[in-house]
Length: 143
Image (cartoon, rainbow, N blue to C red; front, side):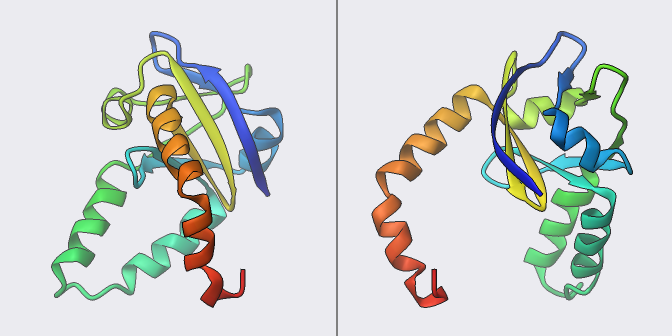
């Protein structure tokens, strides 16, 4: 399971370390792609295959289904973890996420999100301010 908030640096070549616990979970293979809210999603091979099956079931006739499929797959790339525990984030994904030097790696149970430090700070601040309202809106889900 992926948990926590971790800060890392992205080097000029686009390499970024992952938390040691995440490395062991991802050693079977990983895929990075455009995520939602201007972050990147990083999936282990098994979770990626689950997502692939769900997306394949979306109706081709709906424009939102096509748009979401394009967003997820056109940006997707297999990544390897090197001996220093780093992955290479391609230029186009770093540009999409607004990532320069600082990155925040978030563990979200079955996936990892990678954020630029600035965008994470903004998103987190906004979400924390609205946490009571958000929690109340989830009441119907039994949370």
